[in-house]
Image (cartoon, rainbow, N blue to C red; front, side, top):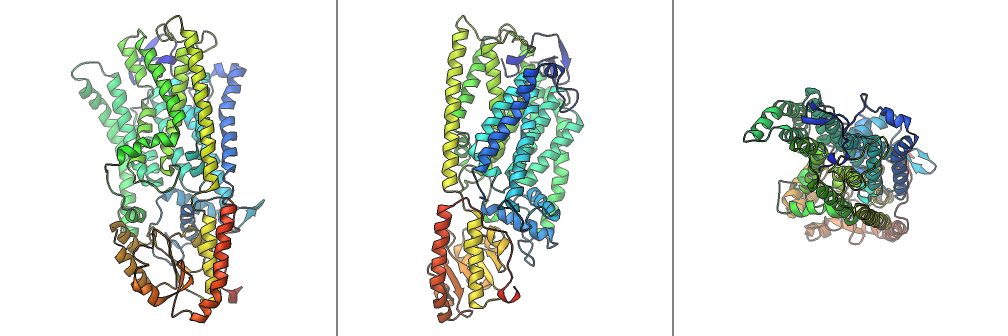
Length: 630
């Protein structure tokens, strides 16, 4: 018995577009997108369950999101800086007047933020109830994306499970798993592109699942929409490219399941899946190719500059280990719950006396979700390990894995409980849990599932609390420590215009009037090339021999090759020993000595404040003019 098999009714069957045996009622979908079946409209309990399935996860998500306070990760503020420059007519540059470098890997997110800034609602220095407009807008986008993601999960669950109560229950389970997931909450609230990325992945699974249930999977319209959604995913994050395979792979799985058994089964399936699959690939590849040419014409690279800096290459031996890391992202209790649900379904299937064609047809019901979830995991596994905690690259896998958990849990519940009343009829003979001990087994399984769910909630809360105590580098800390503080240095030393080389730049871009050079290389083409090659001597030459910055900040690991370079001592004076430097020909020894006590105190105060209040805000994100112009 498959996922859909556990929920099928004993009803007349017909031949459908996706296979030889399709149940008229097993995957009931409304004739109008978003419509509610009549049975649900007549059943108050069903309506309440449907509302609860959406409302409760949203409330839980809001409460978890509030746990992050004003925190935004500094990497997100790099996109904010590009959005600001773009909205002001400065092109794709980190600051006005800077060279065009693709120092971001999320074009659709950056364009969305630039559009919101043009509308006057984002990054305008406003505050509401003490909260910066940047924080308010990205949190609002996260909530909207979460609601839309839930709706997509509901559509996917309906395509697999059928009836409204099963759909609502699966949506509730998936929604709660997602709303409680630290990996999802943290990174969708971080200011990065994760909420949009997860939404597009859920939308693709919903599109393919609904199309399969309605007999439209092989239609050219479905191929076009799937190709465009895959394009959106690839333009939101480079690893989203893997979703270009979702439509053709789903076609192949469904076609194989529907083809008659025999020697020519695979050939027949390929012949059927190839035309719409090729059309869908073309719908993705043609605009993707145009965007690739535009990237090369604008930036001179075929990949984002960030990929060059991180030397992101092809597959390596670490891919299987990183794929296994998804267990940690989901949390062991939820993985065990999914495994338990799968085991229940497999046992029920082995005891089910069902025609082969019926098994083949229902086996394809979950194919779109399974394919998309597998691709989401693959997209995470192919990337090099990320130094930030809580799996920020696993958002599609988290979203689709939560949807799969909801479907598995409800399918297993139906297989064990085999309800005998209500509008959703019981599973057919052979699909119920076998033996006279079925009720006792159901109770034991329910208790185990409840214990695992409780353990998952506790584990998720622990992980989120741990992150909130020591969050990944805050954009506010970067703005205060490397942006406003270096502007203070410039004011005290009489520097009206200057250059700052620093490895953390997001907050700096939004508050500093100094020209910023990214020591990590994300927004600097030359340093990115040298970082990608691992050539620290070339990085030092670029910094000391070419850029010759007015100000320089060093910390590990980005100081490799720079501290040992004799030009650091020869050409620079230390403002904060071992950290902050100014070029000797800019400031006298007496001026630096007079500034040093203030600088050391300010650095210590900023570090202490951030440790005490790691989630606090830092005022409006605006660039203050030099003192003479204030």
